[in-house]
Image (cartoon, rainbow, N blue to C red; front, side, top):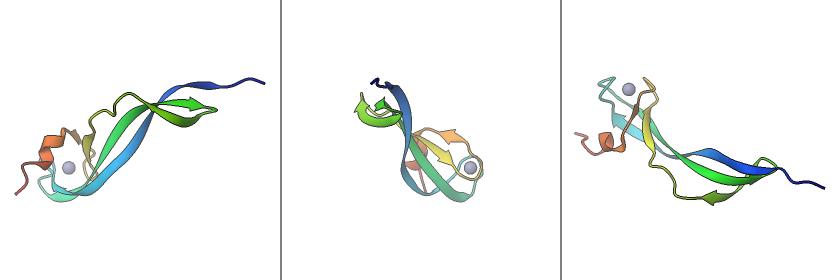
Length: 75
Ligand SMILES: [Zn+2]
């Protein structure tokens, strides 16, 4: 019997909402994705390793990735 294991990054969608995109200049949907390394066994992520990376805000209209601070200066 043998095991297949490894460490693989996994992208987790953490948040969705609406924001005023500075690129489109309109209100549109965004999502925040966070990447985290997982220890996986048989390609199934089991144990999270380390800290999650700060997620980037992705505009679902123009698909531009922006830092989280674009959500703080709304209105
Ligand atoms: Zn946009």
